[in-house]
Amino acid sequence: MKQRLITGVIGGAGFIGLIILGGIPFTLLMIALATIAMWELLRMKRIQPFSIRGATGMLFMWLLLIPENLVSLNWIHLQRLELFLLLIVVLLALTVITKNSFTFDEAGFVILASVYVGYGFHYFMYARFLDNGLWLIFFILVLVWATDSGAYFAGKRFGKRKLWPEISPKKTIEGSLGGTALAIIIGAIFTLFIPIFPSWGIAILFMLVVSLTGQLGDLVESAFKRHYAVKDSGHVLPGHGGILDRFDSLIFVMPIIYLLGFLY
Image (tube, rainbow, N blue to C red; front, side):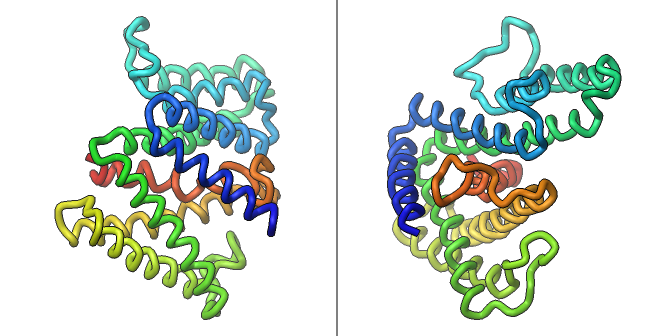
């Protein structure tokens, strides 16, 4: 517990500090976190990160992650998504060239993992650099953390009915509802002082989306770990596990709120 607390305080302070600082330091932090998260996923699948398969996965993820203003692809006359699709074709061709030593299953994993991690951290950066990005990021973090805390304490106090025992045996329906309730309460207090959205209706809808999709993101990572029979995604954060263990909710939330039009 002491180690977990120390890691949380030091890591949290550094993370918040770089979010406030923004710019290149924040961007480099996001690239580092995404790279470690992709590394963790590859290791779950028993793909060595320094192998051709692992390096290909990293390349795919970086293509989706790194902002256009940092690395331009104009010199090859292809849009980033077009290059990504071209590389998917090359990756599938490798299953034939390698006579299935690189399997279709592994190709699919590499593609899906790169989209999951790359777009998750990409839209976190995207949100930070909006006009109201700093407060928007803090709002999202507050909602995710309130959901986690509310779910934990409500689950311990009132939890009886299992939410999804095949995926995460300890989570309960009561805990999930408690997490969403606390997110709305804390989010409403935040909105009273720092209104991010033009109306309360949009603000409450945003709170619900972040809280519910954040919980779904947590279950998605739990499903990964259960499928690959690992307790934590990694050990880079003493007492907390890996980067995916800490950012699973956040990187699931970010693409969804972008697609729903909340990032403007």
